[in-house]
Length: 278
Image 1 (tube, rainbow, N blue to C red):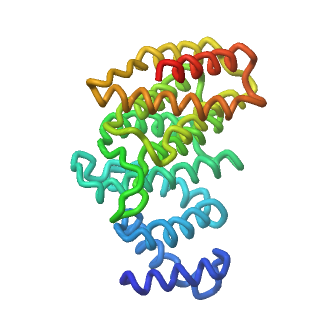
Image 2 (image 1 turned 135 degrees about the vertical axis):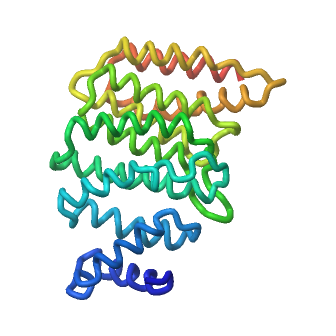
């Protein structure tokens, strides 16, 4: 199926509110094959506004658990999450970062009606550790390709992983470690809401029935150690701004509910201190 035909098919599906009519059911395998070849298309209309909308809805509402589990494995594969990860061309990052979004949809569906195993979640965490360590593209919006947004898409998946309640605190600590890496690894100040999405993911830990305040405080200590803006070293300034904006977002996420008074006071105090330093 060529690109113009695929676009027309996807537009028809969207107009039909993602329902599979008889024509779409007959062509679903062909459409899906074309979709999977183009999840990282450099065409933002095809990738964002057509493929993502259709495939995410089908994963969430229409595909069988068996088919979704197959997609789960595929999105974690070298063909998707690790596609040409050593190449620094942002066009190749599109396949990787959109794989993160589809994995987030799959974990969201699992939260509604569980079907993934503990082994699946362990494999997911291991893959996320590897991916986060190797991804070099931290750009948000690209004028040519549209949204790349690796830190934000990663945050969306980490949020779903936390909310799945599939991880013990020692694994949650690893997830927090990934959030820290994204806050510190950028070679520029985030400007497309990345810190807000990372803060949203972090804040979801407090929505669990039981959370460990000492784990949170230990993580905050490790973040605070990296807040050292030095205006002769712009990388340190970028890191400091990203951390400060993370705390700003976190403050409002937890202001009215979720954690106890001790954590809220810690966040407020640290944010005020950062604002004075700046």
